[in-house]
Amino acid sequence: MGLRALIITNAAGGINTEYRPGALVLIRDHINLQGQIPLVGPNDERFGPRFPDLTRCYSKSLRAIAHSAAKELGSNLAEGTYVAMLGPNYETPAEIRYLRSIGADLVGMSTVPEAIAAAHMGIKVLAISCVTNMAAGILDTRLRQEEVFETTERVRNQFAALLRAVIPGVAAHVA
Image (cartoon, rainbow, N blue to C red; front, side, top):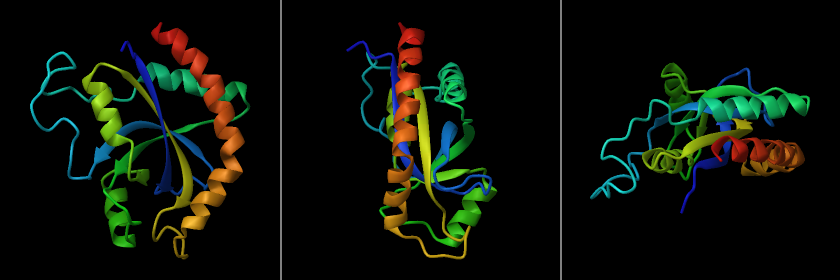
């Protein structure tokens, strides 16, 4: 189909205590703890190699474009490592302590399968997380799905503006 770049967005829990709800964070790497991978089964070599290298799954050049776009909008983007869990539940405080100890900054239930499939096909990936809440045990409060919705509503315009600023640069980069 000619697709050369993919922009993935998600809502994520913040493990890194430097993040706050509403922060937009570029994913620079991931940890897949979902127990599944989209490449299982027969491989069609037309789409990519049997064992794709995920060392550069998240494009450094596309992240640079996003940083530049954010700066033009008067904001900064952090970068972090996203861990994908299967869900559909929030993690426990013990799981979050474990995830932090293995290098995770963000936690969610999506993104990684799509990024793996795209990388398999040689498609450049840019992934942006919106920290919608702090992960379990980071704060002494219970997790509420309403907080996720409230945060996404609060930052919706900022996130949309970033995407509008990023898309032309990504399109020009992969043209």
